[in-house]
Amino acid sequence: MKKILIGCGALLCLCFVLLIGTYVSLPATFEVSRTKLVAGTPAEVFAVAADLHTWPDWTVWSRDGDPSAVWDWTGPPATVGSSMSWKGDVHGTGSLTIESVEENKSMGYVLVFTEEGTDIPSHGVLRFRASGGNTQVDWVMSGDLEGPWRLAGPFMDGLVGGMFDAGLGGLDAHMKTVLAP
Image (cartoon, rainbow, N blue to C red; front, side, top):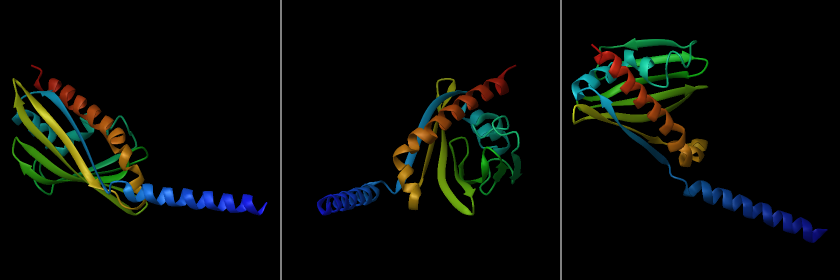
């Protein structure tokens, strides 16, 4: 019986060491990126994407996705410091603030989800480049993974990448309606 207890104790210690080793080896940061060809010129697509009032119309953080959400916007479109915030049953509570703007070329932002008093910031950028008669849009987001969030690192591309794919598809569909005669 004593040998079994010692064996179980050793196995538990080994599992603990493996768990700590795995945690320590996980990346402390993440980056997710997606690219899509979107209808319109870089100036046209930038004008829509840099106007945060339009985000609930084409991103996955949409009005349809969370009818309970209450949205608020501050500042003029495409301006550093402009922001939107929301609170809803599905999307939770958060804000997105424009950090940098290079007109018709890029818009950087910080996205913060506030859950139970914990701010979880991520930095993102949308880049716009002419491609034929359309615009190639690159959407990149990165952030630090602290505490238990570090365990999510290997899954961030799968968790966020699909949202970016859907958002870029939504932006393309939105642009087609905006550009329709």
